[in-house]
Length: 170
Image (cartoon, rainbow, N blue to C red; front, top):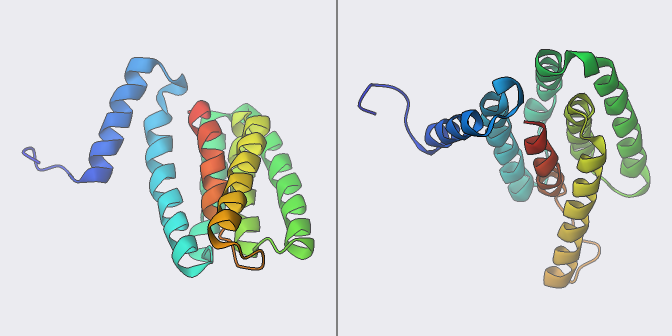
């Protein structure tokens, strides 16, 4: 850029989000930071899951302290509740991993999403949209491929389902 600052689509997008968040009065003035952290992380996870059918620990595990930090910073009164929801979501996802072939990377991802949804108070919305996103993903996969035994990367569907409530929280 002319002033020597960073440029490129991610920086322009974050600048636009920051500008919009100030105009629309999002709570705590934190939406630009939150969204600018969430979008590249979710994009990287989705790309890897589509390409390699896995969600790498190097992206999912560091997201746990980051998610707790986001909740502690912006919703400190909900920190305990966010941890409770993460445990509930992890337990449910682990059961699905054993009985329904949900991948363990998806289990780890759901724990992170549970922390943020629990902290931001958007658990019901997140659950609804994750179910809609996951169900739509499976339906499209079955219609397009017709193979009920094929591997379905659920990470992108989980992230897309979580998206609306994540942005509501911002």
